[in-house]
Image 1: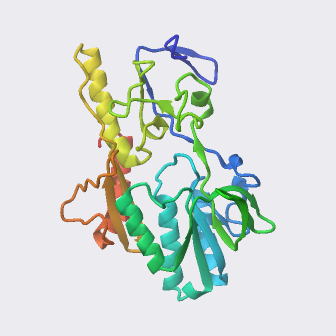
Image 2: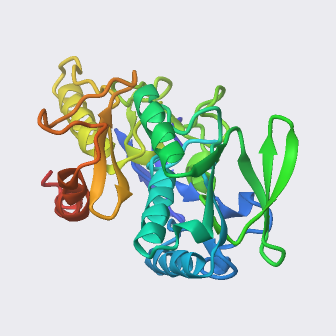
Image 3: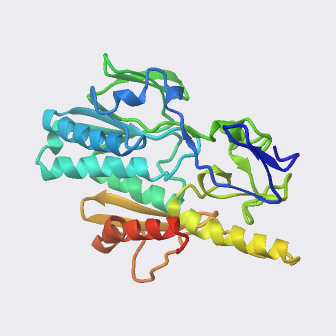
Length: 321
């Protein structure tokens, strides 16, 4: 209740505040896809790495079975904002790489269904991935958004610019639509209009992460309604901005810290290789390591993703990074 500067817990406890930091994360909205349910993951060729560790493990097993038996594999992403927008591309690359390592690539047909006329929002990365898909015989359908699935028939229905179409599959990796948690969605905090309003993302100034209508409210992480920022790397850059501005505010100084939209996407393109892609709000590539070409597949970039990030995540959770 930002009008009264209070939150109410699920037990009914009311807590007043002077400042509110909203870092709720987001909700996986599997039910928005007709016929889809978390219980289906790992069965009938359905994979989805998002729902939890067990579902990720079941998805890995589903990929292996698909490669062993062969057929058509469908990949893609939802139309709205999502955490780590590069992840659907990564899972496509990994499936391709695993099929090749098993000398089964000729037995599988891989199709990536892009939600709009590009596979990635940053132009340079889009061009690179498009070329890589072509070189690895991964087909691309543009402006295809998954809206329904028939697990028994192994068919997926997509909304396209020309109307709904249904594709047969032997394997499909489902990325659920994502939105704000119910408590945030039902509050006055989300954007009231524009592209970020429907899914309940909190209205926030993209530079300060401060709510323009409720200046004592800040949003951090996936819930923040800014053009970039649904990655752990973004959170690492966002939190110091909010903290510095809060400290300035309480000390009577003008807040000056600014978030530039920094996002990092270690684009795994196979086992043992990745591209370390970092960019800002404007789609400019801003590499942290001058010796790493962000658009080149490198073992060191894969090593950072595979070995380095776990320690960074744990340090972040402890407030040490």
